[in-house]
Length: 316
Image (cartoon, rainbow, N blue to C red; front, side):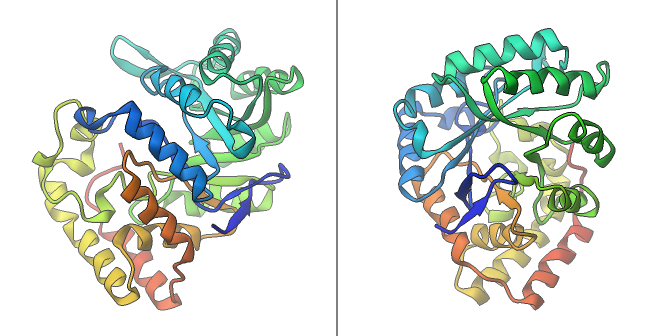
């Protein structure tokens, strides 16, 4: 697979990464299988997928534990990314950017992942109760202590990025980017390009919707996080079928799959952009990897970009 630079870190990774959340958390609980997920992880490395992403809140903790077992002895082949700063409290996911929590979270992640150093460590969300400079300062200390190599931050504003970048370089910004979530193009994606940071695009397939796999809301089982998301309510799913149909039409013209078209659009945003589609199945993984070889015409890109104007439902 083609490779791209991970910001200004000096590391290169496969142009397409792997988000591991769904293997243990949020999506399709009846379809989780640690054995199959382990096979997906091993196949990913064989295909050149080297940016592997997780977080302590996924499970919580069970996703990092899965990766710790599955990737034992293979850390030199990959760039391992994890995140801290979100906790589950009273059944709700909430930010916790207190320095004492972030230090403890890092120790827990190191233990579960079975590594001495995390390659890329993100502040998962900015805690509105804690100055972001305070949270970032303790994360910079983790780098100085040799527990973390590079720092990233998720869902931050340009103003917050400027503030933390003055304290310690931002190696990557992780936020949602897809054909139906393009708001980051206005400020954060260019900021990354201007400041030597990678932009890591999560949910680049619209949480599975842009592949055409979800045609009705009742396909989602109980316990699937998407059942509470505005874009996956019955009326929104029906209205948004026009997006999936448009992606499928472009895919047919290009001899590709809808997933490959959606990912190729994200890859085309810039060389500093790295999509991390998630999957629990090897055929979907192999399909996603094929997107690295798809080149869209300017006309196709323009047509796809306009789909954002048709989306029904907010991100959250």
